[in-house]
Image 1 (cartoon, rainbow, N blue to C red):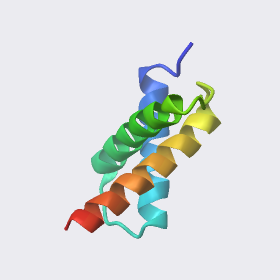
Image 2: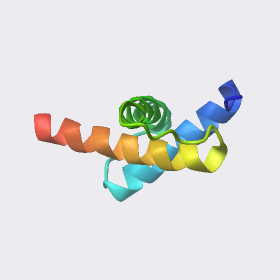
Image 3: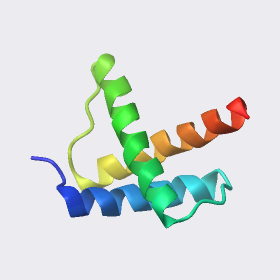
Amino acid sequence: MGLGLIASLIVGGLAGWIASSVMKAETGILANIGLGILGAIILNGALGLIGIYAERAFLPQLVVGAAGASALIWIARKLR
């Protein structure tokens, strides 16, 4: 059982906001949601390749989403 659409948007927005705050990035609410969701998808996939699976609950997905979003912000900065 996953989070569902509304919960995924909320977790994505919070994760993106956390990453944006930590990384001192100036992003808006839509970018935060996108960063959080995309970061969670990418990091969950990468962790799954090495046999680590985050529980499909609010807090674990928030942590994974924030870490993944922070990584995306870091990568984007390095590419510029």
